[in-house]
Image 1 (cartoon, rainbow, N blue to C red):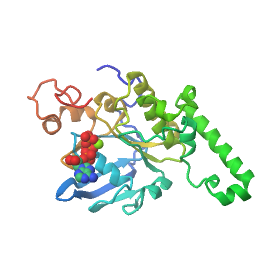
Image 2: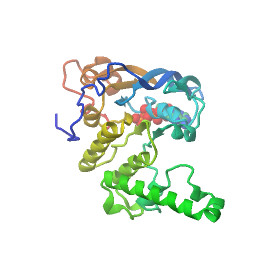
Image 3: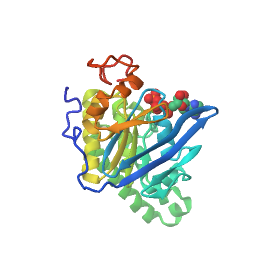
Image 4: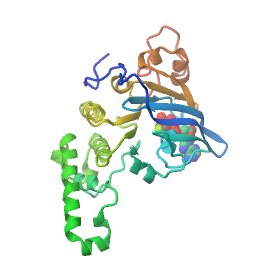
Length: 290
Ligand SMILES: Nc1ncnc2c1ncn2[C@@H]1O[C@H](COP(=O)(O)OP(=O)(O)OP(=O)(O)O)[C@@H](O)[C@H]1O
Ligand SMILES: [Mg+2]
C-alpha cells in the first residue's frame, strides 16, 4: 500500500508498551435514542491512554453520535462515560473541556471573520480580558495574560506551519488549513484526549501528511490521546491502533487494522458484502467513503 500519510507511525504496532493498559475513557453500555430510533445501542468500549485509537464504520453507524455523547453535547439515553475513572456522563461540553477532553467537528467551526491568530486566542477559558471589571481595574494583568496567550498561539502556529496565514481571516483558509486550525485549537488548552471527527475529509494529500504528522507529534511529544473517526482507510492504517468498528449503533469488533480489513463480518456490515478472498478492502469497496 502507498505510504499515504508518509509519516513514521506505529503502522499497526501497538502504541503503548507500558505493559499495563490504562483506559483514559470508558464507554459503558451507552444507548442513545432519537424518538424511536436507536442511533447508539448498548455500546461499550475503552480508549487506552497514550494511544491513537481509530473508530470506523458505515455511514449512520452512530460514530458521531457517540462522540457527541462522550464530549458532553447531549446525554445518553442510558449508560455511562468514565474519564480517567471518573463518571462524567452528566458533565457539559464546557466542563469536559476543562478536564482536557476535547472534540473537533466533522465540519470545521472556525470564526471566519477572525484571523488565525485570533481564532486560537479565543480558545483558552477564563481570560480576564473578557471580564470588563478586570479590564478596567487590572489592565496590566489582562495585558500580561493576553501576551502569554498570544505567545502560545504563535507557538501553535509555528508547530502547525501556519505562519503564512497567521493574520488571514480564517474564512479565507482552505479546507485543509481549517482542519489544521481545528487541531491548533486543541493545543491552546491542556488537552488530554482529543476526539477527531473526520478531520481528514476533503483535505489534500500534502496537508493530510501535515495533519497526520502533527497528530503523531502531539501524541508522542505532548502525550495526547486521540480517538479518531475517519473514513480514509490509509489514514487510519497509518495512524491508528487499535481500530474499533461500529455498526448499527454498537461495537462490532476491534483490533489491528489488518485483521479488521480481513474480517468477513466487517466487510459484510461495512461494505455491503464482498465475496470471500476478493481484494476488496475498506478503501476500495464500492460506495466506501474516501
Ligand atoms: N439529532 C438527531 N435526530 C435524529 N436522528 C439522528 C440525530 N443525529 C443522528 N441521527 C441518526 O443517527 C444515526 C447515526 O448518525 P451518526 O451521525 O452518529 O452516524 P455516523 O456513524 O457518524 O455516520 P457518518 O459516517 O455518515 O458521519 C443516523 O441514522 C442519523 O440519521
Ligand atoms: Mg459522523
